[in-house]
Every structure is written in C-alpha cells, then in structure tokens.
Amino acid sequence: MRLNLVLISMIAEIANNYMKIFSTIVDIRAFLKNAKLKGQRIGFVPTMGALHEGHLSLVRASLQNADITVVSIFVNPTQFGPAEDFEKYQRDLQRDSALCESVGVDIIFAPAVDEMYQPGHSVMIDESVLSRNLCGRARDGHFSGVLTVVAKLFNIVQPDIVFFGQKDAQQVRVIEQMIIDFDYDVEMSVVPTVRDTDGLALSSRNLYLTAEQRAWAPVIYESLQKAKLLYAEGITDVLVLRKTVEPVLLGDGVEIDYVEFVSWQTMEPVEKAGDDTLLAVAVRVGETRLIDNVFLQSIA
Ligand code: PAF
Image (cartoon, rainbow, N blue to C red):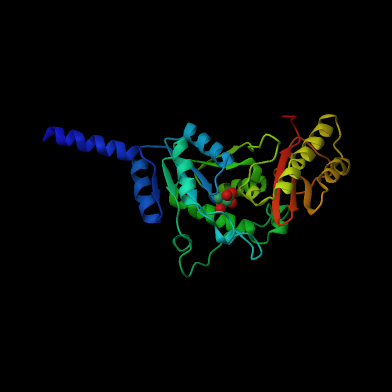
C-alpha cells in the first residue's frame, strides 16, 4: 500500500516535469492558479510560433528569471492587415513544441482563434501616440491588435515577468506604455536582437526570402552599423546620418518603407541624434517586409 503511494507520487512528480500544452483559457488558468498558490514566479514569452533562436533567447532569459516559463503560440489575426501575411504565416505546433521542450519550457499556451476572440468580441485597445510613426504608419491597426492580444494574454497568464525582443522596438515601447497605463503588475525584460552570423536579425519572416534576397539582406544591419560609427565619431545631424543609411539599402526589388531616427521615449523623429535615439528601418524585399533597429549610443 505504502509502496503504491510512493509510486503514485513519483509518477505525479515526473508528469509535472513534462512540458504541458494548453489550448483553453480555463485549463491554463487552473494550472497557473496552483503554481501561484505555491509562490512560483511565472515568466511569460508571447510568440506567434515559427520559433527561431531569437525566441529561444527570450525563453532562456525566462528560465533564468522565473520558476515557470510559459510560451504562448498564437498567430493573432487582429494584428494583420487585409493584405498582410496572416494566411501564409508558418504554423507548425509540433515543430515549435519540440523546440520549446528542448530548451526546458514548462507550459505552452496555444489557443485557437475562437478561444481568444469569442463571438461578439468588440473591445480593442488603441494607443494613439507611440504607435503613430514607424510601423504604425504603414500597418494600420497593427498595434491595436498587438496590444489587445497582449493584454488578453497578460490577463490569462498573469505573469510576474514578461520577455520581448529588442528587434520589435516599437512594439516593446508601446507594450511598456500599456503596462504603465493599465497598471499591470508585471516586470518587462527586453532581450537583445539575435542575429545570423552575417548580421541579419532573426525573424520568422526571413523564411519567405529567396536565396537572392537572403544574400542581399545583411546590408540592413550594415547600414545601421554605418550610422552608429558616424555617431560615435560625433556626427549627430540626422540628415547626414540618414544619407549614410539609405544608399546602402538600395537594391533590386527593394523598397525603403522608412529610415527613422526617433526618441525612444516618444517615438517621434528627432533632428539631432542623442544617446536615446533609436535608428529604425523597414524595407520591403519583394513581398517580404523586414525591420531592424539599433540604439546609436554604443558600437557593440
Ligand atoms: O511579437 C510577436 O510575435 C507578436 O506581436 C506578439 C507580441 C506575440 C503578439 O501577437
């Protein structure tokens, strides 16, 4: 009898150590409620799947800073415009789960669209200042979709600490402001952009690039580095800095969406670059839109 009890508790312990995948809000809430009661610190990495080393760097940061790491995998329809890549966005839960399990994720939350957006859903979050420029200009409604889904995910997971990548700098800033404005009791950690060996920032959308486009793409980071070097030499005039970036980005089938020098706090363009200036670029390479950014203040 006693042996049976020991065996049962050993099996329960082993089962607890396996990664769990939840698809409903009720189930993940019930599980996390228990974790909270035990005083466990919850780390959260929201993603849309198609995971790569950039996402895994967020997961690793969470594993170091929290007791339980939750990754959400949800291709959020409300952040895609009608002409964008919602349909073609890679969805491979088996692949993404295997990757998550290999690095030690505890929980995946992978809801269906109608679990996150029930029939009759009509309330969206709108940010009207920080999302005006950069990607907000080209992607109408994008940040409203991002903020709405992130707020919903925060409410479901109730994390203690959340992890976002610097690559989506404007997204980081807008979510940071939502955390302040909506009094979320959560810490935000921003993890540096992970790059391929040739400098291209990792992105799920790099999968769309043809071999030729992929060979061209490292110039995006080269252009940012050029501006950083000039800034380090004392050039702060944005007109001059911009002139070093734009020519590097010219290429066959390449369209510059923006090259902007903005204040990190306000996301408004500046005329003179300073240490809090973010240089952000977006380019269309054929059908694919790529973004990247750097702060000007350090050479690294
Ligand atoms: O950065 C992303 O992958 C998405 O915008 C996010 C934050 C998961 C919201 O859907």
